[in-house]
Structures are given as structure tokens and as C-alpha cells.
Image 1: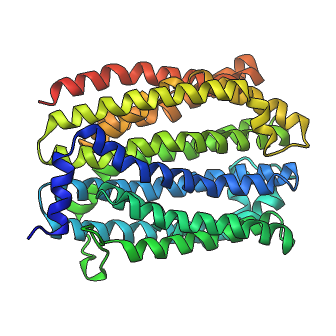
Image 2: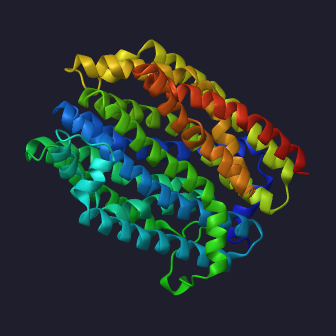
Image 3: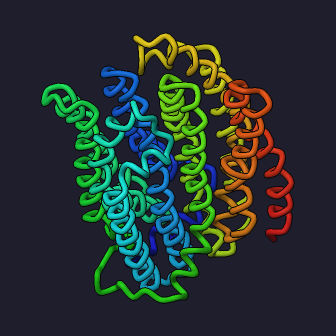
Length: 446
């Protein structure tokens, strides 16, 4: 009789790659969109209060990006190992790694939250908060901090479950918290009169709910469960996590660094600019979630088949993802350019300056958006076949290697126009870098 784990192995290594990626991607796309609903819901409701409250979300976004970097490091690093272990039919090793990856991430998250509680105001000022934004950022931040272990746990478990091919159950867990967040956001913000602080309370509670639902479902349908008895950390396991998770850490971590840099530069031009960047970042993350979700459908297919040495299936799945993500990014770019003012107006309708600045920023980002699909799929491919150094290089290109120097040099030479165009230039340069790297590695995989 075929066990659930054996059935999963057969599905992952025999189903047509394009069809399999689509099947894996659908719940991942929904999960990513729902995950970003947390940010979008907060921005939508808080935008009804005032510009400073909207800007406060952008300030704390830097911390959230840092937290996600930790979660993705442990979640992707352990999940990458788990998918390859399951491809080799090494179930016990996979279970040990799943437990070590999750608990290590949550322990580190608790330390980070404690540091945040001790140094709240200095941290928020470093993130780019002005004195007028600081009270609102602090009110929101004080509730995000105790929720940090649950936020990290959600992202880590989500990545582990996706890499095992159980994206549907991951979607259910994430969706439950997101729906709760949408429902209680207006309750705490408006009905109870808590303002931006209420958005923090809603986020903390909804993330905790998602975490416990995901923890309950881990291990079902042939997946790998979390057991305290399997917590056996070793240097070898942490090296594996580092090898598989470093590209994600670099990518997400640089996202946090870039958010800080953008806020610091934007603060020179006033609260409206900080608020506009907050809205544009949330929108770009939301529309990019579908593309990331599709790529995440590719990751377990890549990991399983690479572990099983079925390299042609890996190549077929990769090019399928590149084609679809490029078409999607091109459509999003066109919509963003045409309807930029309407998009910004959804979040801050009564501030003409935020709408003006946000529209300019969004249109510049959209100009290079069609190239992003190839860059992200290349990064995921390199990461899952454990070409760690190249994956780190591609991951760092868009958000660090090119964006940070482009931002500061551009502002120094061109003023505000340098802030407007930095992301567009960086995205195009990242595409130029990733093409030869990707083609070379594909040729070498025989």
C-alpha cells in the first residue's frame, strides 16, 4: 500500500512540470496575496486617519522586513533541505530539520523583540522617523514587538510546508489570520478609538492565530511535523540552513536596509514623501505577491526533482515560470503607469501631495517591472539547486548591490529625481547581471 509520503514523491517526480508548478503555485499565490493583505489592510484603514499614521507604517515596515528576513532564512534554509531530503526518501532527517529550523527562528525572534522593547525610540529614529511621526510609529511598534515570534513562526512554517508540496494547507493557515486581521482592524482602529495602535493590536493577534493553525496542520497529508523530541540542533544542520537560507536572508535583509535608507532620504523631503513611499512599497509588494507565489510553486518542484536527479524537469519548470512571470509583470507595469494616481488615492484620498509624489514614484518603478520576473525566478532556481554564492549575488543585486548606491548617488546629483528613479535603474541593472549567470548554470546542469 502506498503511503502518503510515497504518493507525494510520485506526484512531484512524474507529473508534467508545467502542470505541477501550476498546481503548487495556486495555493502559494493565494497565500502570498493573503499575507500581503495584512500590510494592505493596515495601510488602507490607517490611511483614513492622517498622513503621520500612514507614514508610521512605513517606518515600522523596516522592522517587519528584518523579521521576515530572519523567518525566510530559517524557513527557506530548512525547507530547502527538507524538500531534497524527501526527494531522497530520508523522512527522519526532514523531521529533525523542520523542528530545528522553526524553533531556532522563534528563539532568535524573541531576542530581537526584547531588543526592540528596550530601545524603541532610538530604533524608530534610525529607521527614518521624524519627530512628528515618532509618537504614531511608537504606538504601532509596541504591539508588533510581542507578536514578533509568531510572525517569524508563520513565515518559517509557511516556507517549510510549501517546500514539502503542502502549499494548500499553508494557504489555509495564512488565510485564517488574514481574514481575522481585516475584520478586527476597523474594530480596534475606529470603534475602540485606538487609531494606529489598534492596527498593531490586530496584526499581533491575527499572526498568533495563523501560527497556531499552521503548527496544528504541519505533518498532515504526508508532510513533516514539528516535534520537540526532534529538536536536535547540530553545526551540520545550521550549515545546511545557512546554505539554503542565505540568499533569502540577503534578499529580505537588504529589503529592510533599503527601507531604512529610503525612509531616511524621504524624511528630508517631509512626512508626505515618507507616507507616499510607504503606500507605494505596500502596493508593489502586494502585486508582486502573485509572481512570488508562482515562483514558490516552482521551488518544491525544483527541490524534489533536483534531489532525484531529474534535471530536465527542473529546466522545463524554470522556463515555464519565467514566461508566465514576465507576462504578468508587464501587465502590472502597464496598469501601474496608467492608473498610478487612482491607486495612491485609494489609501490617502485627502492629501494631494501624497498622491502627487506617490504617483511619480509608482510610475518610475513600473518602467522596469517587466524585467523583475526573470531576476526573481533565477534567484529561486539558484537557491534551490544550492548554488548559494550565485544565489546570494542575484538576491543582493536588486535591493543592495545596485539600489543603495544608485539612491544616494542619484539624490546627490539630481536631488528628488534621484529618489524617484533609483528603483527603476536598479531593477534594470539586476536583470542585466542575472541573465548570463542563469544561462551558464542551466548549461552546466546535466
